Length: 358
Image (cartoon, rainbow, N blue to C red):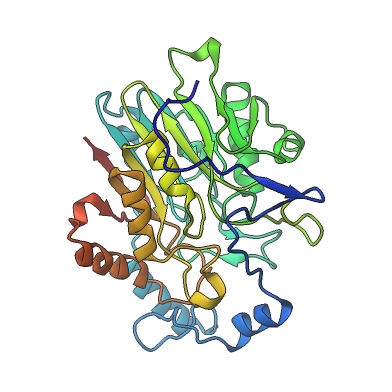
């Protein structure tokens, strides 16, 4: 049973029209082909590094490639995860490791949880059609500690990578539990995955045979969309995850625009000990506001959830927005300062970095 806490208004349920999920918040402004063309080819691109390199993928010479790598190594270092720390996490705290984009390893209450796994070098249907990572993944699946559960927020390639899924399944098999949105179970089964728990918003899963080990997983709302091909748009639901353990509460936002759902989640399940909230891929706002929060809105989510500590994710890994690749943490600091919230309450990590939250 879910926590019986007061709610500010009726919980928003997912909505379907003609077999496809639709935005229930009444804010959908799905871009037209003209909008997409404008965004891709005419909108100002601010991703450049070092002030002089305006696009990471424009320069092909050996010298320019060296300059790009040097600048990225200086400003976006990739750390090798501390294998000793990952294999022996504290039992009385939350240990979190950012593996890039929305892939986060959360270790709490004797459970290791991985979110939106993408440890590939690109995001897309193929390397030639995908987005290349700014930096290499901090580790391979074989270098992770034992993973007990994986939470998937939605089916976009940067959040659901088939190579990473198959590697996790090959290593952990029937010992791994997959928590996925409604409509994704068949795809996971085709990858060979077992123990697939498919949920709609506000549904929860408990595993009786593992009740002394596993926390409660609740699929909660977000504002986004789904697609992996030309014909399957929004046939799979999207959302966030609320995970309630014996001692700690963790929230994973996945990928989202700002919506009333976060206040509902905070009222029903907050306060949270830790939350992973996206802060990147937000420019230009006219194109991305519906589907991606900016850092100021991320701080609003932090407040809505009543989160004690939050990690900024979904930045510095794939070129999904047109803001400068270092703007998300900078703009986050400004948003926190404007509200008088200490940086220690909502922080960012280096790729591969681990932090203990007490």
